[in-house]
Image (cartoon, rainbow, N blue to C red; front, side, top):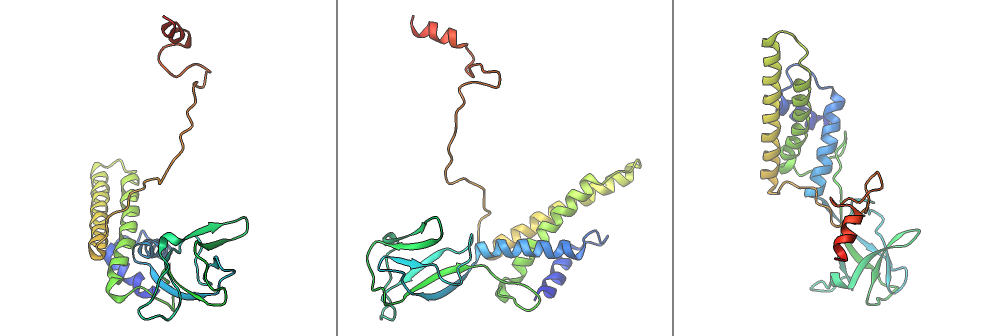
Length: 230
């Protein structure tokens, strides 16, 4: 449970000066839980009743801004199971709700079995993280806290005594190195690669003039027109 993670994370970080409050540790664990949930989400299975022959409502346990649809079984109960091809359905959002649109009609009186992802839960009474992954999740929380301590010691040296300043910088480097090592342990334990922020798509709005209203190209507009008609 949460208390077990608090102890494990404290042992990994080794904050001997007690710079971290318990709330700092809990916040880091919450962020680690979110990261772990993205890397190893739970799979939930729920039968949904079609709204009509080509529309399915989202499952009741669907988590907004997190869940992703993994499969749709239809008809339910076949052996072997039969699934609707992913290319034959898509998520659809209208002004009031998100639904699942089917290309091929189904029997509106027969349920469709949906498998989808949900986040893990970790609190005082619930822990859905597998025991084998507990240390990995704690490592990510520890890395976040070590980053905080590295930043604290890096910017907190306000002493005129050179030896104190050197000790502060050494502490900062130590925690930065520990953060890197803990983050690597998490990635290695789960066999995942570090995520990088890459936009799926973007739209660039090109402004033809700068803030003074002049052309952004090196040459003036008059120069370019003169070159164009030569």
